[in-house]
Every structure is written in structure tokens, then in C-alpha cells.
Length: 294
Image (cartoon, rainbow, N blue to C red; front, side, top):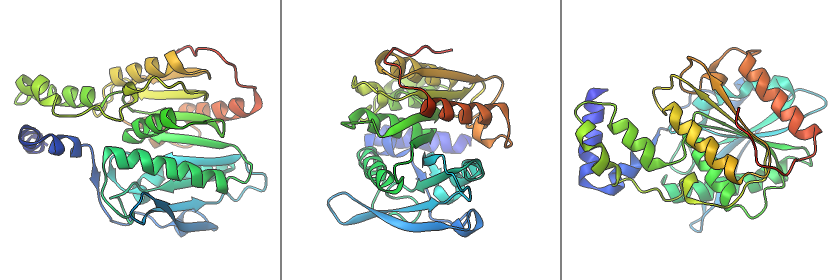
């Protein structure tokens, strides 16, 4: 871990491209297969970009007769969707279909991962979700890096009316800010945290857009998160709260760590709160108001 931090800092000192790339740690290993998660599934590809590239995606179908909607999962920065799907597969038993995908450069998706590409990937996936939802509600669950990608993509989206609710867990409002906090957490890079952080661009960070959302939003963050500091979650919540015309809520997982809500056992208080949030978002008319964190 210490060697990784030192190498990362040296890489940042050499080039800003290296700094920005430190957010991405993809692989192409197969941690799970769709048939292990659902008896009915679609393994398909989503066209993206101008070079004929495609994203690899799974549409896992719930066994429920009366389905509640489609959840689109934005996963975090490491491995690929076949690992991260373990956080969200339980939604199938709750009556939700699940669409999970890999950004370019992850898993079996084409191309190379980049900040700009990930936003374009998100837009393509949400368009595909609208076609697959079959008039059922669409929900977004975005974790860690996926939260920053999802929020930035929604800020750039002309119309978010097709999204019923957004849940963001353990995410951040600024790439530069989270890089500085990580550099400052280790004594060898602490003196360099400020200059090196400026080699990380804030392009496509959630804090770079003032475009309003109009989506009921629930943010969740562990108070002892060692990966993305708790303060980053609070900053993201405040940012969304000031522009969101839908209800904005913040849930603190006291003493918990990174992505602890969806890593907890099924039936936990946090998971039940997410299910209740989805149900309320569908049953109630959107209230055009500034949300209140709590």
C-alpha cells in the first residue's frame, strides 16, 4: 500500500495524464456470470462513441411477476461489473430488474477509460435503459466513482424526467479534492498534496456544473470511510441540495466504511431505507423544492 502511494505520487509529478488515470483500475477477470445471478438475463452490447465501440452490459430479470422497475447500476473504479454486481443483485429478489454495465476499458467493453468517455458511456446506458424499462420506473444506484460519473452525466442530460430516483453511495464532488485528501493521508506525500492535486483536473466533476437535477436523491456515506472521506459525501450532498428540484436526503452510516450499505446483509436498515426511498419516489408526486439533508 505504501509503495503504491509513492509510485502514484511520482507518476502524478511526471504527468497530469497519470494523475487522472489513477482513478481507474479496471480488469477483465470474470468474477461472476449472469446465469449465476438470474435464470433470465440478456447479455448484450451498447453502441457508444464515434469509433464503433460498444459497452458490455447485462440485463438481469427479476423472477417477480409484478416488477417494480429497472435499476441501472454505476459501479466503482476497480475490477469490472462482474465483481460489483454482487453489491446489487439482491434487488432481483425485491422485484427489480437490474441493468449493469462496464465503462470503456473495463471488463469486455471496448476502448479506453477516461473522464470524458465515462460521461458519454453513462448517457448511452441511460438511453438503452429507457428502451428496456418497458414503461416501468427507472432507478439509478451509483457507488463511489460511479456516483461522480452518474451525477455529472445527469447534470448534462437535457431531460431527467425518465429517472424516478437516484441513490449515490460513498462518492465525491471533486476529483481534485479527493486526490488531495488521499495524498494528504500519507506522510511521504503529505507535503506534496497541494501542488500534486492540481495535476488532477476537475473536468466533468459534479462540482463543475450548475445544471439543476429534478430527481429524488438519496446520498449514503459511512462516517469512517477510508477510501472516500466522509466530508466528500457531505460536499456532494450540499452541491446537489442547492440545485435539485427533487427531494435530497443524506444518510450517515455511523462507524461504517466504504460502500458499507450495499455490502451489508439483505434486510439491513440501510438496504430497507433504499427500498422505502424507491417506493416513496414512485408513489408520491415530485415536490419542486430544495431538498433538506438530514
